[in-house]
Length: 480
Image 1 (cartoon, rainbow, N blue to C red):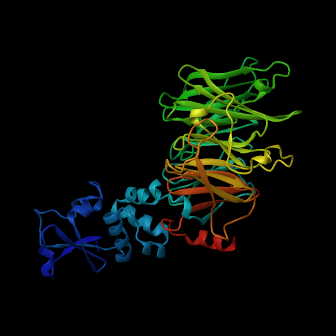
Image 2: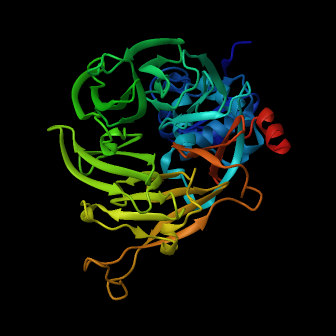
Image 3: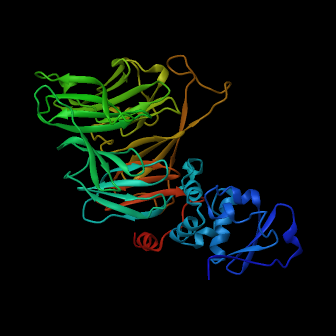
């Protein structure tokens, strides 16, 4: 029997203006032409009803009616209904492909507006093959994620099905950045060159190198990106020079400029610090480059803000008292956030106050800045939307700004209105704790978390919008 056929209507309601009826697997569904056109012009629904051909006939589709009701609800609302949780996501994917509405399904399951930071819970465990723990993760805007573990990169698509595992030339990958759904930039601190890898085809498209003065190899310390450019922090294999190269992603990764080039002589520790994190700030059109160094006098670091068009250094913050364990920038909150290596506390600097003599505003116990126990070692911090996420060992904390009215707002040290941030601990009681968190990533409506000595990736989602659990992941979650 062909998947689509026609038979005569038996209800007087079938002649309502703009209302159409579809028979799917023996079950009748009524909807409107406008709803079906939301599927697009190149789908099964686009030619299902043609007013010039047998207007009083009902199309018959030989498919599962229960799954069709999920697809029809997707067309009507743009989201999957709650009953979709009764199905495995792969079954819904197959149906979406059949009807030609997979793009709508991807949008519904990866919509950033469905990211509810205060309602996040651990929903899925993505197991990785081998014995190596994840060293880096790279999420995409569509909710897919690439994970490096040992010499391999494993990719999961937007529905969190394992897509591929690619064996690379690296012993271990320290920096990983998604350039598209199938292409990543990967680098290591002990292997020369930045590689542009096509994960779908399984080959290296291009290798980018920095030619330093001593003609030695150059290893990758950090990768960053803006809408037009790729930024890479290189250090010479002899560790006596470092630089940041700016590549044009729209012109075959042609070198646009070089900034922050340092040749190290003697005990010049400031020049010896390569940038180990690169963050683009869209509102300021500046690149934030940060790095730290452990020496005889303790841990010191610097945070530099570069104008990539002129190649000039706009501002610099030197870290000495409580250097950062990790640092991030939030363009939405107009601030730089860090976790102090000594205190383990989150602090911030407003964009308006960035200067060489600026002071950090500590959001926790400022008395810990001289803590010899170094409570911040290994802590991670990342910004996403209007929130900042930080880790303390195995726990996740969420920092959000509390907006105060003008009458109740306090005045800070610089005579400006003081900003108030509130902390929340993420997850249900069974989600809290565990091994130390090593990576945080965000894509679509998901947060990805990896932990020390665990060969898997945790997926955190809002309980309202989380995807249906595939059976294999469900079993893994129960065992965990």
